[in-house]
Amino acid sequence: MNNKFLTRMAGAAFTFAALTSATSCSLFQQNNTPHFSGEGKCPVCGTIVSKHPVAQQSSVDKSFLQEILNKDYSIKEYTFEEPKRMEWKDDTITETQDNLVPYFVSTKVRGEKSILPVKATIKNTENDVFLYFTEDAQGQPMNLRLRIQYYADDPLNYNSMVFTIDGFDYKFVPTNIQRGKGEGIMIWEQSDDELKTGDKDLVYALSHCQYWAQLKLHGEDGMNHVKLLNKDQLEAMKRTVQLYLLRGGSFK
Image (cartoon, rainbow, N blue to C red; front, top):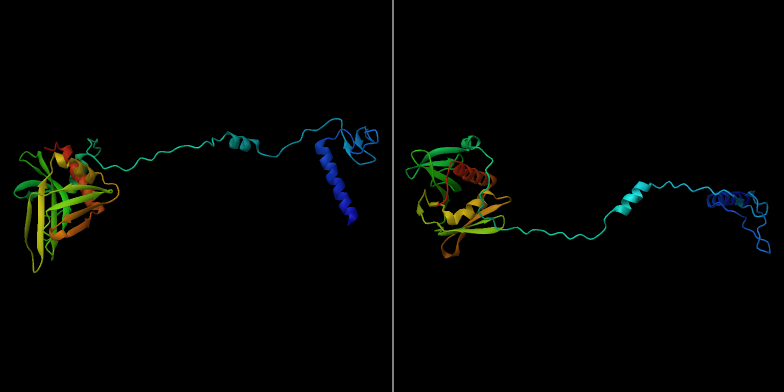
């Protein structure tokens, strides 16, 4: 066991000596001169003496080390822009009328020619929220309108509303509200109003909603009715505004 250990130690010493390229042996005489000053293995201490040191070779990937050293470790400051309430912008419309027309139908609403989304319905017995616009006899857009239809067994008597769009509120006060009785205990309430210049931010937000939107109808005695607008309704509103503007519609 001791012989093996000594052999290993000798090998390690030899390797170490070779790598460090000793120029003299490690044992010195009393006058501080080495026992062996030649080249080769010292017969006293076994040190490998070399007069021609060999440069050590490294197996480390120097390009990787250089990449690490060249990295920028300075602290950077990032600024995050807070969400903002949407306001009207005259955006460029990339859609064409030919692509939008299949999503609409032409019908009569209150005796006027109107362009409605295909899934919208003018019925007292349907709950719905949508935008549409009217046209004159020559097919020119007249006004953009917001229609609300409420149908339930509990009267709401709403007189104002708030759209919450991507976290921001947009108030709207209808001026043309009608109410009536449906089948059995059911009642209906609806409003159909022209959207004007003061409503442009609401129109822009509805047509540019990115995440979610809801409508809250404010009724009597503090009663409210909340309706979440689905993806189809929001897409229909966006298309309606686009087609209205492409055909030359504007706000008064």
